Length: 328
Image (cartoon, rainbow, N blue to C red):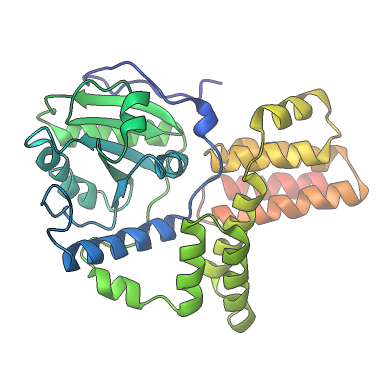
């Protein structure tokens, strides 16, 4: 199966790609939107505090990314199309060119996330992409780089985004970041309960146990809270994947069709790297050919992934039918 998108037709190509070893885990889309809203509020309150003296254009779909945060941005590209926009303080006008992308991103309503990458904050990312100058932009779809431009931006961004969305549809990257760019950042933040805020903060610092505790507190008082249930499942999955050796578990699963732990881990990896149908198919196959406690464990994990994907995901209804057939 060819899982890697290529360059957008008509875009300027460039060398360099990040290793697939960076593709681990996933991020909570609502957490991203909430983090962006808080960042926008902080930027508004502290205008002029940035070393460049410029205030970034606010958007619920745009975040500022440094070396430490770029892996999480890569992970996000398994769920939504990501666009990394690179600029440098030492190159006049490069930041303004990246900020000009924000209205386009807002108009897409969450289909695309913009990560603004400042050279002074992310030298490692610039080196990984072998960038020679700024501004530059590289799209990410399931962790695979799609070069857009370096130096001179394209004149027709609408055409570029149309092609990127088509690539995302082709490779199953079809989710949308919740939130609205027109919603005031303070209002978006005020809607979070203390437990929700604690969960979001814990996810951001990768304290998945604390995030689970916060989501369980919400569910204890509001058992029907779908967002909290998904948040809990997401935090549990991130904890399972934290530090996972993907090559090792994939090799174990390939060598032993009966290794439950390996197949569960591979399904987790596939799911959050965007290969949702592959994850479902693997677990349905395990359920079909095994019995007892192992069968039940695979079924429970599959149901959790159904809930995490959501009933609106196009792969879920068909996978539920296949699971029913495997069980009965």
